[in-house]
View (tube, rainbow, N blue to C red):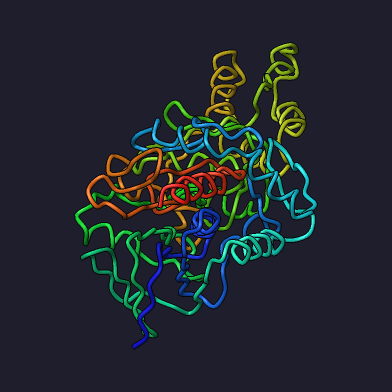
Length: 389
C-alpha cells in the first residue's frame, strides 16, 4: 500500500475544498485533495442550470441560517463576493447578473471548475480522483486510508458537503468523521427544497402543475417575494425553495397570492355587479387564469356581502398551506444543519477540540439563501481554512 505525506489533506473536491487547497498551496503548503468521484466540482457543474450562480453581489450574514447566526460574519467579511469576482475576471470568464445580485457564467459552469483546476495546478495542489476514504485515524497528525493507499498529514480539512443530491455522490462521511472525533452535529434536514401537498391540497391543486405566479411566502418571521410554481406533487419555485429552509413540520406556510394588490376593490365599488363574473375578471387580472378559476371554485362566497369580501381578500393574501413534507435530499439544493458552529473557530474553521482538524462548506451548520449565497460561504470558509492550515 502506497503511503504519501502532505502538509494538509482536503477531503472533497467541491467548491470549499478546492478553494482551501488553493489558498494552502499558495502559502507553500503541500496540499492533497481526495475526491471520491471521477472529476472535481460535480455540484458546481450542475448548479444554476449548468451556468453556476457562483456568488451574489448582496451577500450578507443575514442571508444565512444557523443555530449561531453570528458565526458566518468573520469569514464573509474576510473573503467577499468582490474577491471571488476578481478571481473570475483574472481568468477572463464572462459573466452576468441575472437578478437580485445573482451572478452567472455566460457560457457554462465548466468555466468555474476549469478556473479552480488551473489555480490548483499553479499552487502545486495534488488532486486524487476516484479516491474514497475508508478510514480516518488521528494520532500524531491524521491518517486517511483509501483503497489505493494511505495519506498522512498534520492537518485534515473536511469539505465533504452535505446529503443533498445523492445521485451525484453525496455521502454522510463528513458527519461520521465529526462524530467519530466527538464533535457535535446539529440535526440535518433538506433545505432549498420543494414542498409536497397534503392529500386534500393535492386533490385541489395538483392538476394545475406548471402554473407559476409571483407571491410572498412566509414562515414565522421570515418571508420571500419571488415566483411560486405548482407541481404534480406540491409547491416549488424560488419563493418556496427559500421558505423551505425555515419551514417546521406540522406548521403551515402562508402565501400572499397577490402582493400589493386590492383584489375586491371593483366588487365593492359596484354593488349591482357583485357576482362571480366580476370576481373572475378581477382575479384574472391578478393571477394566472387557471389558478384564478380554481381559487374561485374553492373559495368564492355564497353571498357577496362586505364581510364575505373582507374574508375573500384575507384568504387571497394569506393562503395557508400545511405541507405534508418535502421532496427530500434528492431534490434539495443544500443540507441545513451539520457540524455545530460552537465546535469551530469562526476565523479559521478549525475544531476547538481537535487541533489540526477543519470543517468547511456545506458540512457546517451554515445554510445560505438561494441565489449564490451558498457558493459564497464555500469560497469564504475554504479561504479562511486555507489561510490557517
